[in-house]
Image 1 (tube, helix red, strand yellow):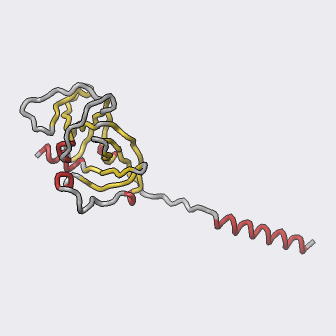
Image 2 (tube, one colour):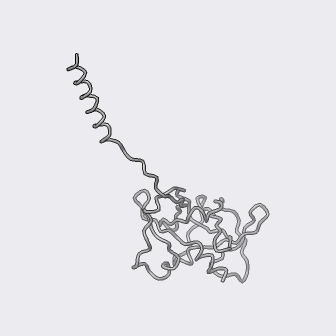
Image 3 (tube, helix red, strand yellow):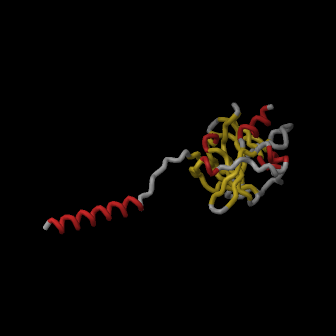
Length: 171
């Protein structure tokens, strides 16, 4: 009888050992929300904390005498918000407005504005460690507006610094 008990104890101990080897440790990684969007078939992102709302494309009213980067203004539930073309800051031509175009209402550096994008790809939480610093080889029109880069769905995504973009408009 004692021999059977010893065998069962050995078997149970072996099972515990095997089970503990296969355990996956759940590590709580620091994550950040990003809003991924497209401009001329390239993917970009803003930090989610700076995006207040995503709006369907609505009529943008041109304001005479405004800088080229400001497309005009829109009415958001009684508030008048400017809409800027981030393409101008990145040295890109203006994209086509389609049924997929959206206006990302953002706020940073004490400024609030809409930013016209070709489409919203996704809103996701990504590990902070997956965001790489801006490439040193980045061309100069983009360089000062880039906060970093990441990969999403096997695509390279350029993370933009909204504070720098909006700060340039406010200056």
